Length: 140
Picture 1 (cartoon, rainbow, N blue to C red):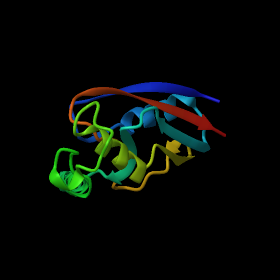
Picture 2: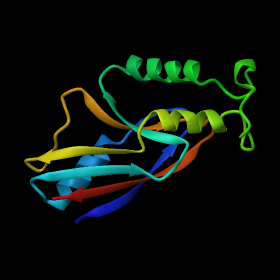
Picture 3: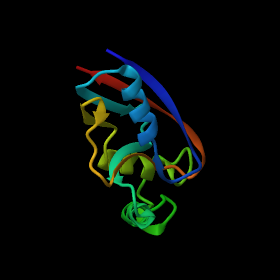
């Protein structure tokens, strides 16, 4: 069963597309049918399958999550105890808990079975840049 680890550099909070890297991995594996499992090896970012055509969708998602879980130094969030790594740390863990750290995508005819407007994204929840590790595993 083929698998690999890819590295995705981030520049702070936002969505980072990596559909092309996942599709290239599936193509190189040469497997016609199966399931691609994608897993992120961190607790302060997550994975999404989301709209890939209109950048307003990504902007609105980011704004929604910023409003849903503001930084811990905002008055409404002062109850947070885990602030060792800064005001974005615990909110990043909450956002990751509300989203997914693993997703599965069927492979049909040697290609990812994504819809026309679907893309695969790493959703970075921290303010500063990171290098995130994502495991791709293709099973029959």
